[in-house]
Image (cartoon, rainbow, N blue to C red; front, side, top):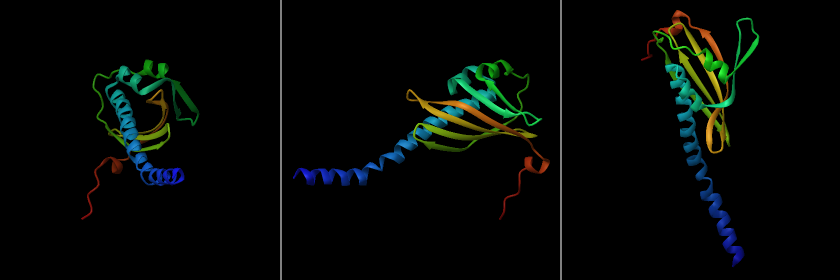
Length: 155
């Protein structure tokens, strides 16, 4: 009898246990999107306080200089560089993708301006139950006139 109960429990956990993962992943994705939206809001509004909510204090930002050299900034170095412009440039932000694996995730975002685009890859970890950005790697591309104009929709 005991063996039959254990067998039934095993079958039920296989049949229904895997159902929990998509729901858990959906919840985790929403939590990550919230952090990424804080990042996008912080950079758009030049708001260091919002950025601090999205980033782990030890996070780094990596990028390549025009010379091709690898550069990095700590959060504090980056925050010191953030200056609110007199007129903020128009930009369109989007979350391109989010990939989750356990307590680690990667988010790709884009910030498109009139003549250039930033593509950001954000590494996130779930630390003490909260998702935080631990590293950012970004690229900046100049936009050509054809890439900044809306393309006609195919009929």
